[in-house]
Length: 569
Image (cartoon, rainbow, N blue to C red; front, side, top):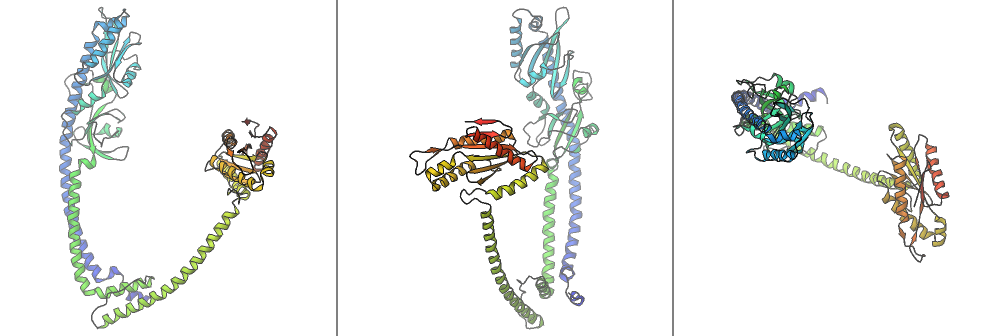
């Protein structure tokens, strides 16, 4: 387009209407953006302050519940370890084992709330002598606990808290050890504390950041793990944000377990030091979008209000400017569409008889003439395309016929040779397996002479159908010539190919063929030679051909592999 025409053709962004609307839009948008930022920032700061206050208190409540529950469990284990029945059992007194087993089972049933999942009694040498529990997994943990764990303490074995108490006889000598695995259900209940709805989920976390237990356990937004390095440096009195391994963002609070009364800061040492040595800690957390849902709600409302204001002022600006420059912009836009080949355009015609009215009517007449001319050209092109499509379909039919056996509708010899060339190149490059099955119908010439060529052809068609149903979709089945067929099996070694060949042979042998000219249904057998590609194309086919020859020489109705293995009926 010449420069003079470019100067006369204004782009939409340079029009007066666009400038006015853009100015109104930017002014409204900047104002709304500032107000939105202030509102969202204030709401976010308020919610963050609330979380900084609530998370420590939630952790303190869960701390107290966990400590109290574990100490109750340790006390119960110590009391149970003092029972004479257990000491007699580990000493091997006659009849004491049954009484001790009943004592352990009764101790588990007598729990007012879920606390212990399993109990195991070990002898002085560490051998397991008694076991009881509702969890096979918990029993397995106790049975495989290190023998060195014999001092009274609370330990962390895997993801299970385990309490230990020594069994001592009347002389104070250690006769064995009582080990108890705490119940996961009770552990979850102890973490719950006085957790308020919406406060998040409280987790018991190991040193690697994995969540061992969580309360409430039914929360659908639970996290499975937390960044261990972040927990190590997280402040104990403020919330921190994190990104979980699954990509979700969350916010929470953290406090580590130490050897004092429950969670750090207690007045006295207890048996919780084992959990401290394992690096366990408590975390309260919830998804970031749930914690800051009020912020998202405020953002949504502000966005809706801002959008309504922007649209209203933009619409008013558009109506005012359209009444002034609308007709000229319509002509300019219409001319631009036509210059780009878009002829389906009509500009609104004004009711006036001035220059603009004459120009709009003349423009529309010109566009209609251009559309008529284009329609005639498209009609001619459409006819040409239809002729080309018909020719293409005819070529596709001819191509398909050239690779299809006319009688059996299988692939023909030509297609097989082309496919063999492609597959050999592919497996030579990728190192994949490739096998060949060369199939020949036994005594087909005699059948053909006895039944006639028409029935012989029908028999070939039926056997071809059986072969097609017996091989995989990924295999290439072709009629190699006469009564010979060939299968190219990709991704298949010699052993598997021999198995498939035997399946094909059995299927054909067990099929009855009702033929005109035969008094009763006849049975037909096939012989199959199998070979695996070893890097040489000619040797590949020759190996299958020699195997087929050996199958014929071996009495027919059998499968022979290129390595000499024979499978018979």
